[in-house]
Image (cartoon, rainbow, N blue to C red; front, side, top):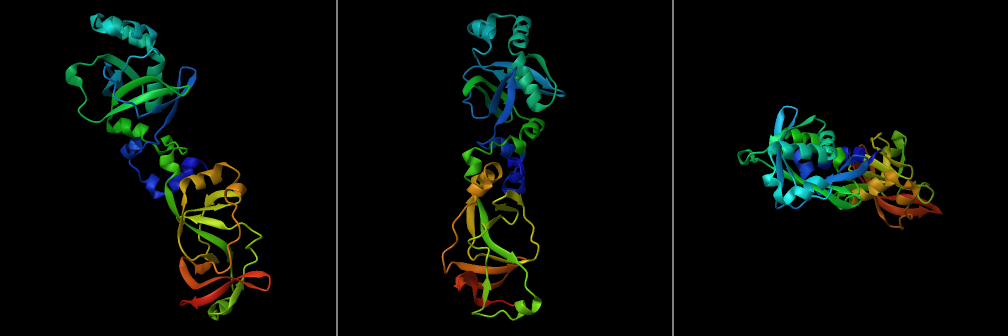
Length: 302
């Protein structure tokens, strides 16, 4: 599974609104400034001064504030005296000097961008304004502001734009249980199960356990896949635990056998026997001879 497919599996990310996605510190948009790969981030300090341009994304007019930057050499050269430059000349200079940046914005929003003119003070946006920066070669190259409408928020606030390597994503905790074995039993054997009985578990020590995350994904030595309850009997850890989203993402992108490798549980580890989400029996890990076994301590109605 791809990293963002994994995130989309869990409600804490799948149910995020576009505005909440944009507010996440993990929001990062890969883009290109001309031929240079770069990223857009929304963590810039608000610039003290900007050249405010009225731009139109198809039918919507917005105010784009461009901060002084050596990335725009001709604009940078006249920056201190820009107020003395006639508007048509200044706009022509913006189109010439900032063309690659404007194309980047058009590609990011996925709507055609057109310069309308210099923004009037009365056009100052009343709503939320993003303070963004374009990072090229690990350094800020451009800082700008842009007011956000529902259309822009929806265009930019996509789950695919969350950086799954960011700690805000990787450090998130998810409910999990470790599954040591899954099997079937004849109905008569299951009905007669009683305290003191032992169910052999040859999987322990020979196969890596599976980690079922939030009842939605399973992490195993072959990677990360969707999990479905097939109604088999499952021997799992008795207590719920948590794993990090980073562990799940690593199992999908790295060597899963190394990511999920863990030693066999010690004797007396509390276990439960589950079917279709219902605990059938409680017990612990023991041995029958040299074979690991689930030792039944108590049974529930079956």
